[in-house]
Image (tube, rainbow, N blue to C red; front, side, top):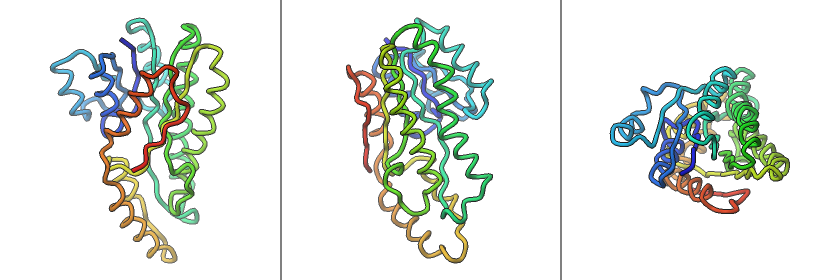
Length: 243
């Protein structure tokens, strides 16, 4: 039985990943901003002790330190860290204001980086472990109106490749998971963030229409890929899960 940490676990990919690991016989520590909002995980806890809910804000270093240190004291220590927590943002590059841009980068790039820096000493001490960073196919496609979001995921992707080469000698594996468009809360929020200026209005509306048609797959498909990778030896460096 592995000790698995999943961030951003209240809904969508994170929630199904937590449930998937629990169904596979692992113990999960699910990091959520507000445990009371994780309705399905709370329901699971009423029938099983395979999932523990812990408050976690990936933009707060103190919250991260508490989360990792408590997890390291559970069972035999941390086996798998799934960096899933993220925020969505859709806008033209011209309309991408600095405040929202910084918020996206802070969560989608610096959040996983903070968790990695906190968890790696524990993983290195045990000389084993698996890190799964949830990126996006948008990191490579360069689609219009996702420049800032794609940049945050591309940065995480590049970081992950470098990390894999650094930690292999400690018995630590790294996997990058790149989902396409799936019907999740983050995808709905992604579309809701579009507030185009006049020059981009028609193109932005077309983007919303395309994503509404494309985002038809269930996020469980991504969760299944994550759980499968964590139980594969050796695990792959990169998994793409197109919509």
